Amino acid sequence: MASTTVTVPEVALRSGNARPMPAIGMGTAKFPLVRETTRDAVLAAVEVGYRHFDTASLYGSEQALGEAVAEAVRRGLVASREEVFVTSKLWCTQCHPHLVLPCLRESLRNLQMDYVDLYLIHWPISLKPGPKVFPAKREDAVPFDFEGVWREMEECHRLGLAKAIGVSNFTTWHLDKILATATVPPAVNQVELNPVWQQRKLREYCAEKGIHVAAYSPLGGQNWSGEGNAVLQSEVLAEIAEARGKSVAQVALRWIYEQGLSPIVKSFSKERLKQNLEIFDWELTDDDLVKIGQIPQKKIVKAANVIFSQEGEFTSVDLSDIKIVEE
Ligand SMILES: NC(=O)c1ccc[n+]([C@@H]2O[C@H](COP(=O)([O-])OP(=O)(O)OC[C@H]3O[C@@H](n4cnc5c(N)ncnc54)[C@H](OP(=O)(O)O)[C@@H]3O)[C@@H](O)[C@H]2O)c1
Image (cartoon, rainbow, N blue to C red; front, top):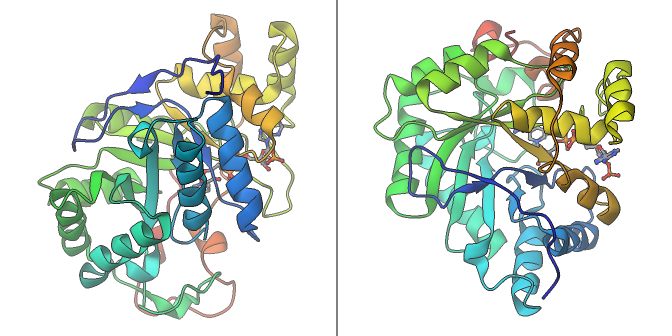
């Protein structure tokens, strides 16, 4: 048995019958993805104490994650698959009622698992069915059938294939649409959130509706846009980190945790994986919180420039319907 020194708190999800969610998850998005490297990183994460893993049909990391969990069970690092919390996501080309269940079944085949703990609609965007092309063509965006897609998400839950269901990259406007039709409300909204993009309005809304917020790109992401990393390069965070004897990454992750949110953080380095887990036995001061609250805000991930190619036109959706920027 590996010695796990860190006790990770857990969050009870309001809807669904999922086991409580460990308050920090490991992200597995990496492009291009190398299966072996991902598998080894997940195994290293299990060794240092992670029990919550985030994947998506888009990432191509489901197989590596499933292999790593199976190997962790074989090695006795965990007693069974039930000890880990696995999230996967429905990609935009499958955001059509008849494709939801087949897409989850394909994810389960990739993962070699009978269920996921949490299944999310990846984006409030529907693309014409077909192969996953990234970036997508603007003319392939079609109106999102919120009622029909959510009904099928609920079916995934009813069948026990997804212990909890939720959404990702949803604004309050998109959440209103789901809540207007839901029998099982979304348990989680996974969104870009960090000290540089704090999403106060969305957090308040989700708290009121009992939707737990998971924070992706908690360290500012992987610099896919080439603009640098506003979190890891923040002077405010660096000052606080120095005063607390912590790293900037730890300050960002601790701040997210203190807001009652769960960071989903990607590292494929065992040393940084371990460091990122060491955020549960110390606190930020009130003064630190005030300083972090004053950091100028900047969103990195925007649907129009991340999901879609810059050429072409949106012909059948209104761009404002897929806007995910709100303060
Ligand atoms: N739902 C969505 O639409 C969505 C979108 C984006 C991401 N996600 C999920 O959220 C996960 C995390 O977000 P992200 O991958 O965008 O980025 P992130 O977790 O903010 O940042 C990861 C970057 O920081 C580095 N890093 C990690 N720990 C560090 C530390 N202690 N000190 C310095 N650098 C450190 C990592 O590199 P090393 O590996 O070299 O450590 C990596 O390049 C993803 O992997 C994915 O699972 C979801």
